[in-house]
Amino acid sequence: MKRWLSKAETTLGNHSDRLNAINIFPVADGDTGTNLYVTVRAAARALQSLDTSALPQITADSTVHSFGPPDPALNDVGAVLAQAGEAAMEQARGNSGTLFAVFLGAAAEPLAGHHRLTASLLAAALNRAQIRAWSALSDPVPGTMLSVMEACARAAAAVDSAHDGDDSNHTLGLALDATVNAAVAAVVRTEDQLEALHAAHVVDAGGVGMLLILDCLRSAVLGEELQDQLLDGLHGYDVQDPHIHAAMPRDEGVEVMCTITLSPLDAAMMRQRLDEMGDSVIMSQVGGAPDASGAYRWRVHVHVPEAGPAVTLIRSLGEPSDISVSELAAPQTPDGHGL
Figure (cartoon, rainbow, N blue to C red):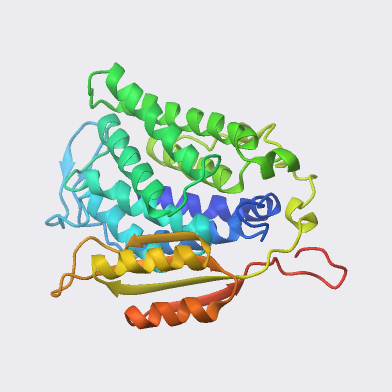
């Protein structure tokens, strides 16, 4: 998990400019690459401080060399990933970053208590993650990273079913291969699923970001190089292609994000009111346990014409932290082109 997220941080950093260049949905603000990078970086750095030196080390001849008592929290794939997911959710940026944070936290749940990844667990994790990501959005739209998540979950489940739940590393490798291949096909399909993408002749930026993240998982687990050829032929993704978002009309309004503790009833009320005020509403729990009063921590994201009414609503229901307001319009240079 540490190798995966560290590799994903580096990869998204390298690809952020190209992802930003084709980011035109839901708004042409040219920041999907940056938002995914910042969110994945938060997840990766949450795990950098974990000390795995005390874990039992297994050599090629299957001999176990124990250097101290294993810490259950460090030897539990789900627990480690949940820690990364919570850090990602707390610092999530934008639609894409928030949805990835939801994906990460949800994927951790079926892995809790397990010390290694198998094809069955991968399929369960991907399925839980894609369901949670779709449900986090008030108005989920096909042709986005949501479709990529769904396709990957189905592909992993098909491999698991075909091999009757075999828990070998070989079957895990087949499931990871199928997952990444399904992600490529789903990314290609996004261009025809969304009118804005079809008109601009580009694929979805968030979908490509998800593809990169999943190929990093395959690379980390199998110990193989990233498959750079996966990106060949994706419309809009060649280095020489223009920054598509710069030619799009500037979107008015702001993005409001915060973390807040709410009861389930107040959370439902906030979602309904934010849906009335704006769009791109995403609400997801941060961590799984309620406090003593039965309230949960929530990460909130919305696009609204003006920040004032949304912030007033949020403050009327609780005390938000990490509240941020940013313009939806992409930053412009003096000559009118996007940065």
